[in-house]
Amino acid sequence: MKGKGTSENPYIIMTADDLFSMSETGGNDTYFSLGTDIDFNNTPYAENFMPIPLNCKKLSGNSHVIRNVNYVTPDGNASMFVLTGETQNITIENLYIENIRLSGKNVFLFGNSGKNNSISLKHCTVVMNDMIILDATSADENYRHCIVHDDGIAVSADYCTFVIKAQSYRIYPFFSGDRISHTQLNLEIYANAFAGTTGGYNSMITDSVVSDSYFFVNIASNKTSGLVAVDFSSHTCKFSGCYLVCDVCSVVLNVYWYGEIQSTCFYDIDVLRKNNQIALVDGDNLKNIRRLTTQQCKDAEYLRSIGFSCMGA
Image 1 (cartoon, rainbow, N blue to C red):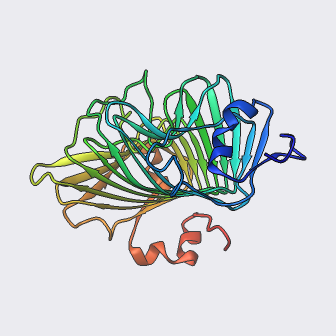
Image 2: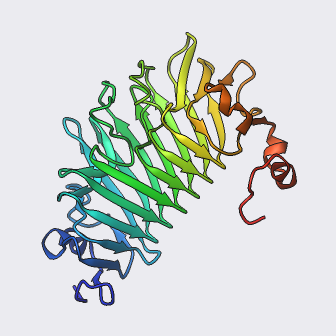
């Protein structure tokens, strides 16, 4: 690869092989930059993909795309990337990732074979088209995995977009122990059944601090009867300036938005079916959350009047 791996002169990634060479050429103080789009179709990795080793300090996408990843491992965990060291602090910026299909006992965007690692995502777009999660067990306080990352990784995302379609036995967390700001999440989950949660660790968002972000969540199921409640977030989350659009199948009676609502947040009541409701807890915080019609959600002047800060307005 061209370059010297420094901040001023990073290694330039031009091929799929270059991505995998980070394992040998990289290090905790090494910089990489994409010089072109990387398409895994028509490469040796198309049928024999293994996770891309993130062994660097910073990976700059330069608005290029990594696309067409297909990885199936029924008896193991499937991830697109893997962190192999310990106490790695990695920044990824201006990167597009699309047409990603992963199937395994658990699936992650970022897998982990080390520990105490962190990833900072800035101005990234991630489209994961088909996540098939085969494990029916529940997360717990000792194993806080989620779709974005494996256990032992903390993620911060700023000005990012995630579009995720997942199939799983239970409601599967998307963020866990993370810091999220100015980010949009479009999450479609098809749950084969609804397993009981364990202390909120199977909420869609758990143990996270979230600000100025938008969530569109669609929950479908082949379950045909029963009154089911699902958790959008855990008690240990903190929210400010966020809004939620949640469309659920008929068997879901309640969607619980738990956590500390630190400043004005709202959700679209029109999108929920008439027999559904969002139930809230922590009464001291109820004054900061609003139940709005679709029209009110789109009215910037009205939103400002209730204390919601409209970005760009």
